[in-house]
Amino acid sequence: MSAPTSSVAGPATGLPPQAVKLARNGVAVTFSLNGLAVGSWFSRVPAVRESLDLSAGRLGLLLLAMSIGALLAMPTSGLLAQLLGTARTVRLATVLVAVGLTVAGLGATLTGSFVVVAVGLVAFGYGSGACDVAMNVEAAAVERRLGRTIMPRFHAGWSLGSVAGAGLGALAARLDVAVGAHLCAVAVVVLAGTVLATRAYLPSSAHTPEGDTADATPAGRRRAQLAAWREPRTLLIGLFVLVAAFTEGAANDWLAVAFVDGRDLSEAAGAAVFGVFVVGMTLGRTAGTIALDRWGRVPVLSTTIGLAVLGACLAVLAGSGPLAIVGVALWGLGASLGFPVGMSAAADEEAHAPVRVSVVAVIGYTAFLAGPPLLGLLGDHVGILRALLVVPVLLLPTLALLPVLRQPRSGSAHQN
Image 1 (cartoon, rainbow, N blue to C red):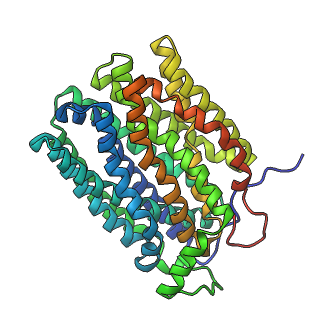
Image 2: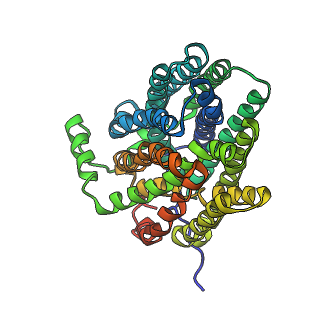
Image 3: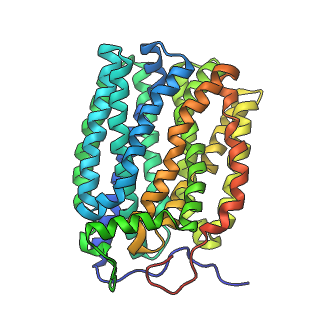
Protein backbone atom coordinates (compact mmCIF):
# COMPACT_ATOMS: atom_id res chain seq x y z
CA MET A 1 0.00 0.00 0.00
CA SER A 2 1.40 3.38 -0.90
CA ALA A 3 1.86 5.98 1.80
CA PRO A 4 -0.81 8.64 2.12
CA THR A 5 0.02 11.80 0.24
CA SER A 6 -0.58 15.28 1.56
CA SER A 7 -2.78 17.38 -0.68
CA VAL A 8 -0.32 20.28 -0.52
CA ALA A 9 3.37 20.57 -1.27
CA GLY A 10 6.03 21.06 1.35
CA PRO A 11 6.25 24.43 3.06
CA ALA A 12 7.51 27.33 1.00
CA THR A 13 10.51 29.09 2.45
CA GLY A 14 11.52 32.71 2.84
CA LEU A 15 9.38 33.81 5.79
CA PRO A 16 9.91 33.23 9.54
CA PRO A 17 7.62 30.44 10.85
CA GLN A 18 6.17 32.85 13.42
CA ALA A 19 5.08 35.26 10.67
CA VAL A 20 3.29 32.43 8.86
CA LYS A 21 1.54 31.37 12.07
CA LEU A 22 0.42 34.93 12.75
CA ALA A 23 -0.90 35.18 9.19
CA ARG A 24 -2.73 31.87 9.71
CA ASN A 25 -4.41 33.27 12.81
CA GLY A 26 -5.29 36.52 11.06
CA VAL A 27 -6.88 34.66 8.15
CA ALA A 28 -8.84 32.43 10.54
CA VAL A 29 -10.24 35.49 12.34
CA THR A 30 -11.18 37.12 9.01
CA PHE A 31 -13.08 34.04 7.87
CA SER A 32 -14.84 33.77 11.25
CA LEU A 33 -15.98 37.39 11.26
CA ASN A 34 -17.19 37.18 7.67
CA GLY A 35 -19.19 34.11 8.66
CA LEU A 36 -20.59 35.99 11.65
CA ALA A 37 -21.89 38.71 9.36
CA VAL A 38 -23.46 36.31 6.87
CA GLY A 39 -24.89 34.00 9.53
CA SER A 40 -26.41 36.94 11.38
CA TRP A 41 -28.18 38.13 8.24
CA PHE A 42 -29.55 34.73 7.23
CA SER A 43 -30.78 33.96 10.74
CA ARG A 44 -32.99 37.08 10.59
CA VAL A 45 -34.42 36.41 7.11
CA PRO A 46 -37.74 35.12 8.56
CA ALA A 47 -38.09 38.33 10.59
CA VAL A 48 -37.30 40.49 7.54
CA ARG A 49 -39.85 38.56 5.51
CA GLU A 50 -42.45 39.24 8.21
CA SER A 51 -41.51 42.91 8.44
CA LEU A 52 -41.79 43.43 4.67
CA ASP A 53 -44.74 41.01 4.26
CA LEU A 54 -43.10 39.07 1.41
CA SER A 55 -44.23 35.99 -0.47
CA ALA A 56 -41.68 33.24 -1.12
CA GLY A 57 -41.18 34.54 -4.65
CA ARG A 58 -40.59 38.15 -3.56
CA LEU A 59 -38.27 36.99 -0.78
CA GLY A 60 -36.26 35.12 -3.42
CA LEU A 61 -35.98 38.33 -5.42
CA LEU A 62 -34.82 40.21 -2.33
CA LEU A 63 -32.14 37.62 -1.63
CA LEU A 64 -31.12 37.92 -5.27
CA ALA A 65 -29.92 41.47 -4.52
CA MET A 66 -27.14 40.13 -2.29
CA SER A 67 -26.12 37.64 -4.97
CA ILE A 68 -26.02 40.37 -7.63
CA GLY A 69 -23.69 42.43 -5.45
CA ALA A 70 -21.37 39.46 -4.95
CA LEU A 71 -21.36 38.58 -8.63
CA LEU A 72 -20.50 42.18 -9.59
CA ALA A 73 -17.48 42.02 -7.29
CA MET A 74 -16.06 38.74 -8.52
CA PRO A 75 -14.63 39.59 -11.97
CA THR A 76 -12.33 42.32 -10.62
CA SER A 77 -11.57 41.05 -7.11
CA GLY A 78 -8.55 39.02 -8.17
CA LEU A 79 -7.03 42.00 -9.97
CA LEU A 80 -7.82 44.22 -7.00
CA ALA A 81 -6.06 41.81 -4.66
CA GLN A 82 -2.99 41.90 -6.93
CA LEU A 83 -2.97 45.71 -7.13
CA LEU A 84 -3.75 46.57 -3.49
CA GLY A 85 -2.68 43.39 -1.72
CA THR A 86 -5.02 41.00 0.04
CA ALA A 87 -5.00 42.88 3.37
CA ARG A 88 -6.14 46.21 1.92
CA THR A 89 -8.70 44.50 -0.29
CA VAL A 90 -10.21 42.64 2.67
CA ARG A 91 -10.39 45.85 4.74
CA LEU A 92 -12.11 47.86 1.99
CA ALA A 93 -14.50 45.00 1.27
CA THR A 94 -15.43 44.68 4.94
CA VAL A 95 -16.32 48.38 5.08
CA LEU A 96 -18.93 47.62 2.41
CA VAL A 97 -20.08 44.54 4.35
CA ALA A 98 -20.65 46.64 7.46
CA VAL A 99 -22.42 49.44 5.59
CA GLY A 100 -24.62 47.02 3.68
CA LEU A 101 -25.58 45.05 6.78
CA THR A 102 -26.50 48.27 8.58
CA VAL A 103 -28.60 49.63 5.70
CA ALA A 104 -30.44 46.32 5.24
CA GLY A 105 -31.18 46.01 8.95
CA LEU A 106 -32.35 49.58 9.41
CA GLY A 107 -34.31 49.43 6.15
CA ALA A 108 -36.32 46.46 7.42
CA THR A 109 -36.87 47.96 10.88
CA LEU A 110 -37.35 51.68 10.27
CA THR A 111 -38.62 52.05 6.72
CA GLY A 112 -40.14 48.70 5.85
CA SER A 113 -38.90 49.39 2.33
CA PHE A 114 -38.10 46.53 -0.04
CA VAL A 115 -35.88 48.87 -2.10
CA VAL A 116 -33.81 50.11 0.86
CA VAL A 117 -33.19 46.57 2.09
CA ALA A 118 -32.27 45.48 -1.45
CA VAL A 119 -29.76 48.35 -1.80
CA GLY A 120 -28.18 47.34 1.50
CA LEU A 121 -27.96 43.73 0.34
CA VAL A 122 -26.25 44.72 -2.92
CA ALA A 123 -23.55 46.53 -0.91
CA PHE A 124 -23.36 43.63 1.55
CA GLY A 125 -23.03 41.14 -1.31
CA TYR A 126 -20.40 43.21 -3.14
CA GLY A 127 -18.28 43.49 -0.01
CA SER A 128 -18.69 39.79 0.80
CA GLY A 129 -17.75 38.79 -2.76
CA ALA A 130 -14.60 40.91 -2.86
CA CYS A 131 -13.63 39.77 0.63
CA ASP A 132 -14.23 36.13 -0.32
CA VAL A 133 -11.76 36.18 -3.21
CA ALA A 134 -9.06 38.11 -1.33
CA MET A 135 -9.22 36.07 1.87
CA ASN A 136 -9.16 32.79 -0.11
CA VAL A 137 -6.05 33.95 -2.00
CA GLU A 138 -4.40 34.82 1.33
CA ALA A 139 -5.54 31.49 2.81
CA ALA A 140 -4.05 29.54 -0.12
CA ALA A 141 -0.72 31.36 0.30
CA VAL A 142 -0.66 30.54 4.02
CA GLU A 143 -1.64 26.91 3.34
CA ARG A 144 1.22 26.59 0.87
CA ARG A 145 3.75 27.94 3.36
CA LEU A 146 2.53 25.66 6.13
CA GLY A 147 2.97 22.65 3.82
CA ARG A 148 -0.27 20.91 4.86
CA THR A 149 -3.98 21.13 4.14
CA ILE A 150 -5.61 23.87 6.17
CA MET A 151 -8.01 25.62 3.78
CA PRO A 152 -11.07 23.70 5.07
CA ARG A 153 -10.25 24.81 8.60
CA PHE A 154 -10.33 28.43 7.52
CA HIS A 155 -13.76 27.72 6.08
CA ALA A 156 -14.60 25.94 9.34
CA GLY A 157 -13.82 29.26 11.00
CA TRP A 158 -16.32 30.83 8.63
CA SER A 159 -18.83 28.19 9.67
CA LEU A 160 -18.13 28.79 13.37
CA GLY A 161 -18.78 32.46 12.77
CA SER A 162 -22.03 31.49 11.08
CA VAL A 163 -22.95 29.28 14.06
CA ALA A 164 -22.36 32.26 16.34
CA GLY A 165 -24.39 34.45 13.99
CA ALA A 166 -27.23 31.92 13.88
CA GLY A 167 -27.18 31.54 17.66
CA LEU A 168 -27.23 35.27 18.24
CA GLY A 169 -29.98 35.58 15.64
CA ALA A 170 -32.09 32.94 17.38
CA LEU A 171 -31.55 34.68 20.71
CA ALA A 172 -32.37 38.08 19.22
CA ALA A 173 -35.55 36.67 17.67
CA ARG A 174 -36.61 35.12 20.98
CA LEU A 175 -35.96 38.38 22.84
CA ASP A 176 -37.72 40.43 20.14
CA VAL A 177 -34.59 42.48 19.44
CA ALA A 178 -35.17 44.67 16.39
CA VAL A 179 -33.41 43.45 13.24
CA GLY A 180 -31.82 46.88 12.72
CA ALA A 181 -30.30 47.10 16.20
CA HIS A 182 -29.02 43.54 16.00
CA LEU A 183 -27.36 43.87 12.58
CA CYS A 184 -25.84 47.29 13.35
CA ALA A 185 -24.09 45.81 16.39
CA VAL A 186 -22.79 42.90 14.31
CA ALA A 187 -21.49 45.30 11.64
CA VAL A 188 -19.39 47.22 14.17
CA VAL A 189 -17.84 44.04 15.61
CA VAL A 190 -17.07 42.58 12.17
CA LEU A 191 -15.42 45.75 10.84
CA ALA A 192 -13.26 46.40 13.90
CA GLY A 193 -12.15 42.78 14.21
CA THR A 194 -11.28 42.43 10.52
CA VAL A 195 -9.14 45.58 10.48
CA LEU A 196 -7.11 44.19 13.38
CA ALA A 197 -6.85 40.68 11.89
CA THR A 198 -5.52 41.83 8.51
CA ARG A 199 -2.50 43.42 10.17
CA ALA A 200 -1.13 39.90 10.59
CA TYR A 201 -1.40 38.95 6.89
CA LEU A 202 1.64 37.93 4.87
CA PRO A 203 3.54 40.85 3.33
CA SER A 204 2.45 41.59 -0.24
CA SER A 205 5.86 40.60 -1.58
CA ALA A 206 5.34 37.07 -0.24
CA HIS A 207 2.53 36.48 -2.76
CA THR A 208 4.94 36.72 -5.72
CA PRO A 209 6.78 33.41 -6.15
CA GLU A 210 10.52 33.51 -6.72
CA GLY A 211 11.35 33.39 -10.37
CA ASP A 212 7.89 34.51 -11.43
CA THR A 213 8.22 36.30 -14.74
CA ALA A 214 4.55 37.10 -15.26
CA ASP A 215 3.75 40.53 -16.68
CA ALA A 216 2.87 42.61 -13.61
CA THR A 217 1.57 45.61 -15.57
CA PRO A 218 -2.20 46.32 -15.44
CA ALA A 219 -2.50 45.22 -19.09
CA GLY A 220 -0.59 42.03 -18.36
CA ARG A 221 -2.83 41.24 -15.42
CA ARG A 222 -5.93 41.77 -17.55
CA ARG A 223 -4.50 39.38 -20.15
CA ALA A 224 -3.86 36.81 -17.43
CA GLN A 225 -7.45 37.20 -16.23
CA LEU A 226 -8.81 36.60 -19.75
CA ALA A 227 -6.48 33.63 -20.24
CA ALA A 228 -7.83 32.00 -17.09
CA TRP A 229 -11.31 32.03 -18.65
CA ARG A 230 -9.99 29.79 -21.44
CA GLU A 231 -8.47 27.10 -19.19
CA PRO A 232 -10.62 23.91 -19.20
CA ARG A 233 -9.49 22.80 -15.74
CA THR A 234 -10.28 26.18 -14.19
CA LEU A 235 -13.73 26.24 -15.80
CA LEU A 236 -14.55 22.70 -14.65
CA ILE A 237 -13.42 23.51 -11.12
CA GLY A 238 -15.72 26.53 -11.33
CA LEU A 239 -18.63 24.31 -12.36
CA PHE A 240 -17.99 22.03 -9.39
CA VAL A 241 -17.81 25.01 -7.04
CA LEU A 242 -21.07 26.33 -8.53
CA VAL A 243 -22.94 23.20 -7.41
CA ALA A 244 -21.11 23.16 -4.08
CA ALA A 245 -22.13 26.80 -3.53
CA PHE A 246 -25.73 26.01 -4.47
CA THR A 247 -25.76 23.10 -2.00
CA GLU A 248 -24.53 25.36 0.78
CA GLY A 249 -26.41 28.48 -0.32
CA ALA A 250 -29.78 26.76 -0.56
CA ALA A 251 -29.51 25.94 3.13
CA ASN A 252 -28.25 29.42 4.01
CA ASP A 253 -31.08 31.13 2.14
CA TRP A 254 -34.02 28.84 2.75
CA LEU A 255 -33.48 26.26 5.51
CA ALA A 256 -34.84 28.40 8.35
CA VAL A 257 -37.83 29.54 6.27
CA ALA A 258 -38.48 26.00 4.98
CA PHE A 259 -38.71 24.56 8.49
CA VAL A 260 -40.83 27.47 9.72
CA ASP A 261 -43.30 27.02 6.85
CA GLY A 262 -43.04 23.30 6.12
CA ARG A 263 -42.73 21.96 9.66
CA ASP A 264 -44.59 24.67 11.61
CA LEU A 265 -41.64 25.79 13.72
CA SER A 266 -41.20 29.19 15.35
CA GLU A 267 -38.75 31.74 13.93
CA ALA A 268 -36.35 31.02 16.79
CA ALA A 269 -36.56 27.25 16.16
CA GLY A 270 -36.02 27.83 12.43
CA ALA A 271 -32.85 29.79 13.20
CA ALA A 272 -31.73 26.94 15.46
CA VAL A 273 -32.22 24.43 12.61
CA PHE A 274 -29.95 26.59 10.46
CA GLY A 275 -27.47 26.43 13.34
CA VAL A 276 -27.54 22.60 13.17
CA PHE A 277 -26.63 22.77 9.49
CA VAL A 278 -23.70 25.07 10.21
CA VAL A 279 -22.50 22.84 13.07
CA GLY A 280 -22.38 19.96 10.56
CA MET A 281 -20.42 22.18 8.17
CA THR A 282 -17.99 23.11 10.92
CA LEU A 283 -17.34 19.52 11.98
CA GLY A 284 -16.77 18.47 8.38
CA ARG A 285 -14.33 21.28 7.71
CA THR A 286 -12.42 20.67 10.93
CA ALA A 287 -12.00 16.91 10.48
CA GLY A 288 -11.82 17.10 6.69
CA THR A 289 -8.23 18.40 6.63
CA ILE A 290 -6.99 15.14 8.14
CA ALA A 291 -9.02 13.07 5.69
CA LEU A 292 -7.83 15.11 2.70
CA ASP A 293 -4.16 14.72 3.61
CA ARG A 294 -4.63 10.99 4.19
CA TRP A 295 -6.81 9.97 1.23
CA GLY A 296 -6.78 12.90 -1.20
CA ARG A 297 -9.43 15.14 -2.66
CA VAL A 298 -11.36 12.75 -4.92
CA PRO A 299 -12.16 9.91 -2.45
CA VAL A 300 -13.07 12.32 0.33
CA LEU A 301 -15.32 14.47 -1.85
CA SER A 302 -17.05 11.37 -3.23
CA THR A 303 -18.01 10.46 0.33
CA THR A 304 -19.13 13.93 1.36
CA ILE A 305 -21.28 14.37 -1.74
CA GLY A 306 -23.07 11.13 -0.85
CA LEU A 307 -23.68 12.39 2.68
CA ALA A 308 -25.07 15.68 1.36
CA VAL A 309 -27.49 13.87 -0.98
CA LEU A 310 -28.71 11.61 1.84
CA GLY A 311 -28.98 14.48 4.31
CA ALA A 312 -30.93 16.80 2.01
CA CYS A 313 -33.40 14.00 1.18
CA LEU A 314 -33.93 13.25 4.87
CA ALA A 315 -34.34 16.93 5.75
CA VAL A 316 -37.16 17.26 3.21
CA LEU A 317 -38.83 13.85 3.21
CA ALA A 318 -38.41 12.51 6.77
CA GLY A 319 -41.72 11.96 8.52
CA SER A 320 -40.40 12.84 11.98
CA GLY A 321 -38.80 16.05 13.20
CA PRO A 322 -35.77 14.40 14.86
CA LEU A 323 -34.93 12.43 11.70
CA ALA A 324 -35.23 15.62 9.63
CA ILE A 325 -32.76 17.32 12.01
CA VAL A 326 -30.35 14.41 11.53
CA GLY A 327 -30.73 15.01 7.80
CA VAL A 328 -29.89 18.69 8.24
CA ALA A 329 -26.71 17.75 10.13
CA LEU A 330 -25.68 15.25 7.41
CA TRP A 331 -26.42 17.85 4.74
CA GLY A 332 -24.09 20.28 6.51
CA LEU A 333 -21.40 17.63 6.95
CA GLY A 334 -21.64 16.62 3.29
CA ALA A 335 -21.60 20.19 1.99
CA SER A 336 -18.59 21.16 4.09
CA LEU A 337 -15.62 20.50 1.80
CA GLY A 338 -16.75 21.24 -1.76
CA PHE A 339 -16.25 25.00 -1.72
CA PRO A 340 -12.91 25.17 0.17
CA VAL A 341 -11.36 22.28 -1.77
CA GLY A 342 -12.46 23.90 -5.02
CA MET A 343 -10.74 27.12 -3.96
CA SER A 344 -7.55 25.23 -3.05
CA ALA A 345 -7.60 23.48 -6.43
CA ALA A 346 -8.01 26.81 -8.23
CA ALA A 347 -4.99 28.16 -6.31
CA ASP A 348 -2.69 25.18 -6.96
CA GLU A 349 -0.25 27.39 -8.89
CA GLU A 350 0.55 30.43 -6.75
CA ALA A 351 1.52 32.74 -9.62
CA HIS A 352 -1.96 32.34 -11.14
CA ALA A 353 -3.94 31.96 -7.90
CA PRO A 354 -5.61 35.42 -7.77
CA VAL A 355 -7.02 35.32 -11.31
CA ARG A 356 -8.01 31.64 -11.17
CA VAL A 357 -9.69 32.00 -7.77
CA SER A 358 -11.51 35.02 -9.16
CA VAL A 359 -12.76 33.05 -12.19
CA VAL A 360 -13.87 30.11 -10.06
CA ALA A 361 -15.58 32.48 -7.65
CA VAL A 362 -17.50 34.17 -10.48
CA ILE A 363 -18.78 30.82 -11.71
CA GLY A 364 -19.49 29.56 -8.20
CA TYR A 365 -21.36 32.66 -7.14
CA THR A 366 -23.70 32.26 -10.08
CA ALA A 367 -25.38 29.72 -7.80
CA PHE A 368 -26.11 32.50 -5.32
CA LEU A 369 -27.48 34.59 -8.18
CA ALA A 370 -29.79 31.92 -9.61
CA GLY A 371 -30.50 29.92 -6.46
CA PRO A 372 -32.72 32.27 -4.41
CA PRO A 373 -35.20 33.15 -7.18
CA LEU A 374 -35.21 29.57 -8.53
CA LEU A 375 -36.07 28.05 -5.17
CA GLY A 376 -38.41 30.91 -4.28
CA LEU A 377 -40.44 30.57 -7.47
CA LEU A 378 -40.46 26.78 -7.17
CA GLY A 379 -41.50 27.18 -3.54
CA ASP A 380 -44.55 29.20 -4.60
CA HIS A 381 -45.79 26.04 -6.37
CA VAL A 382 -44.63 23.12 -4.21
CA GLY A 383 -43.59 24.78 -0.93
CA ILE A 384 -40.10 25.81 0.07
CA LEU A 385 -39.37 22.55 1.90
CA ARG A 386 -40.12 20.39 -1.15
CA ALA A 387 -38.26 22.81 -3.42
CA LEU A 388 -35.03 21.91 -1.58
CA LEU A 389 -35.05 18.53 -3.34
CA VAL A 390 -33.34 20.37 -6.20
CA VAL A 391 -30.13 20.08 -4.13
CA PRO A 392 -29.60 16.28 -4.39
CA VAL A 393 -30.72 16.32 -8.03
CA LEU A 394 -27.88 18.74 -8.88
CA LEU A 395 -25.30 17.14 -6.60
CA LEU A 396 -25.18 13.64 -8.07
CA PRO A 397 -23.78 14.63 -11.51
CA THR A 398 -20.86 16.46 -9.87
CA LEU A 399 -19.24 13.11 -9.11
CA ALA A 400 -18.10 13.13 -12.75
CA LEU A 401 -16.21 16.40 -12.17
CA LEU A 402 -14.11 15.22 -9.24
CA PRO A 403 -11.02 14.10 -11.24
CA VAL A 404 -10.26 17.72 -12.25
CA LEU A 405 -9.74 18.59 -8.56
CA ARG A 406 -6.80 16.21 -8.18
CA GLN A 407 -3.68 18.02 -7.07
CA PRO A 408 -1.05 18.23 -9.83
CA ARG A 409 1.78 15.71 -9.56
CA SER A 410 4.36 18.18 -10.86
CA GLY A 411 7.30 18.83 -8.61
CA SER A 412 6.85 22.57 -8.87
CA ALA A 413 7.05 24.34 -5.55
CA HIS A 414 4.07 26.38 -6.54
CA GLN A 415 1.69 23.48 -6.99
CA ASN A 416 -0.29 21.31 -4.59
